[in-house]
Length: 82
Image 1: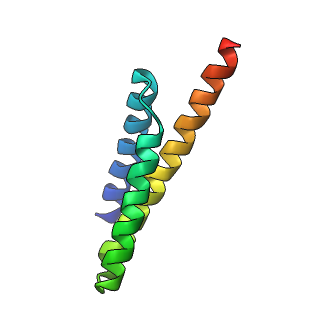
Image 2 (image 1 turned 45 degrees about the vertical axis):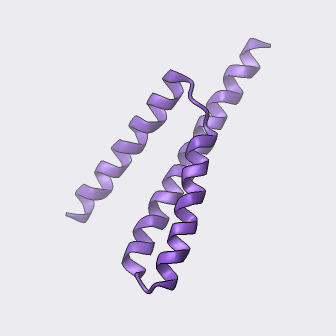
């Protein structure tokens, strides 16, 4: 079951990056979501919810990685314009 959840997460993030890239949405949105998840992770860790904190940290990393990929795509697009 855990493998299926992780597999769906990977598919979800691929779809997220694809939609953001096609619609040319600002990549900083995903980085902002990642930062909000990091803060939420810290709060849940203080509250003693280690499993939830681990889950949130995983998603924070995914959103941060998606933001970096989107920033790279944006940089490549801008460099091609000249």
